[in-house]
Amino acid sequence: MAGQVVDRVEDGMDVRWTRVRWVALGLFATVLLTVSLTAGVSIDRVGVTLWILTGLSLWSIGRGWSTWLRLLRDWGIFQGLLLLYDYGYGLAGRYRTGGALPSEGDPNVLGIPLHVTWPIKADEFLFGGVLPNQWLQEQLGAGVPWWAWIVTLTYCSHFFAAPVLAVVLWVRSRDRFHVWVRMMFAMAGAGITTYFLYPMAPPWLASDQGYIEGTAIVRQTGEGWTQLGFHLASQVLQDGQNRSNPVAAMPSLHMATAVLVAGFLMVGARRWVKALWILYPVLMAFTLVYTGEHYVIDVIMGTLLAVVILQVWLWLRRRRLAREALGEAEAVVAGAEDEALRAPDLVR
Image 1 (cartoon, rainbow, N blue to C red):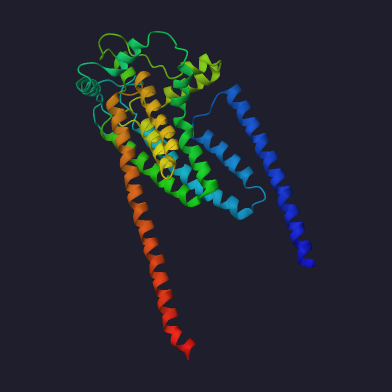
Image 2 (cartoon, helix red, strand yellow):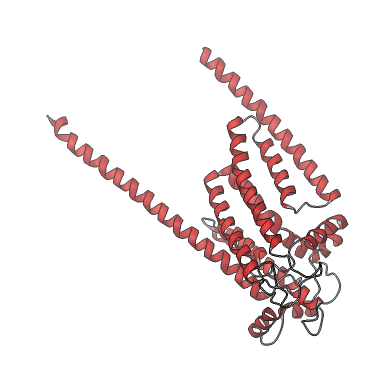
């Protein structure tokens, strides 16, 4: 009887904490949406991290201090290392140009010159003398098209897709969360290394500096916010772009992240779900080229980077599953042998 009373009390406490948790998460979602619409969408690492930690802390209500401490440990390490990536990303964009944007041949902090004309020649070689960025903007016309908001949302999804996936994985499976973290580190490490060793200007910058003849390539990533009426969000994006490394173009980590997210979620999914996820990197590729953010060669290299990381993960995953299957088979055989050894004793 006493045990039944204790069980009822514990069940009542669980229900109470569940209600408190959902109310808190509802208020959090309301505040997040309100701030995003009125003060702009935060795309900086610290801002995104604070929102994530707040949301997951509310999700941890009633689950015990151990859950919250795991949250701080897992996300502290993850975001701390990503902040180091941001520092390296900024350092790779420092040039001795007195504050002006670097141009062809200007050396970075390692003394390696900036490449501007090579990617132009590479894309023209791939497309028979046509520069895809220029061609798309010419064919789709001047001004802001009605679908500009799709392009802007696709571009900005880069800042949220990987963190949101990490949140979902942490809530549902910490093992998969740690796998995702390692994949992100591999991608970020490869990107930073290339930004230092092969600095390269994007199409919009090359066009601004006169390296591309003909129709100017316009940077068009923020027009969709204005089209949707979110003028402040457009300004926040532009400010973030102005403070970022303007020559971190090769490879495109926007593209690499999109392929990595889609590829990770496609594993084990149904065919129609896989088809839907393929649309994300395809739309990202179009967005990056159309808006003048990246050349096609950047997109190709970003895709290859993500594919290599995915293939290494799948190879390691297959090896782990094979070892587990072998271990289970050996355990079954050992159990059968034990039964066989005990059988004579049972007969006697």
